Image (tube, rainbow, N blue to C red; front, side, top):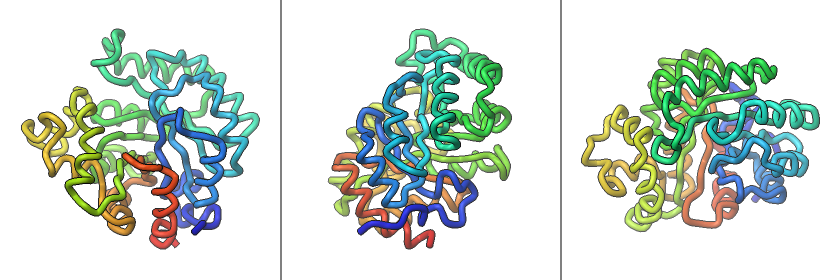
Length: 289
């Protein structure tokens, strides 16, 4: 079943993104897939796994679709110079006005030799984007902790949190105020057996729990240190990887909206992502119609 283009964007705080989007590692994003996701009614595609600022795939994805937003989630400041990101933004803006959102972040201390003073690196990157005339409302930051969240509020459209919970979304909304964009990513497994779903989820959470920025944020969100050991406790995995029927997943994801998010980026784990997103689309449409 297909849902008419734009249906999921009804009654939106941000009419460019819609309520629901899709988070994909950028090598998995194809023009044909983006076109179908647009037809299914998803409002945005978020390109993960740190695409380069000059990745040659952005234009093809935009050209294959008509209105869907393509966002980066995220371009890594250590890997892609701000001037390069700005050049890509302006090139895409000229061809596809209003459809590209530049998501920026600092990545992970454990994977970046230059990670010293990441906050200062973000400030410098934003200063350079200002100089290159990338509009504030067309860029956002991967923000988890309060200091970077405040920077996102003051210097960009808002925050793109990853591996977070509705409780974290609520804390961001309280900090950022009513006007900033909050668009969290959330992982999903379309599987009604909890043990099988958790097994899939743990294949992903194990890696992220080894990274200090995510572990610190989850501790701030109320998880005990022992819950973050290994691949995480059942309670932690259930919070980070939604599972069940399509209806159960959509209901659980909507907790972010109730907590103050404008948009949710769904990341499908362990399955054909297009098949799962086809199944979810009519359920999502029914929730926002």
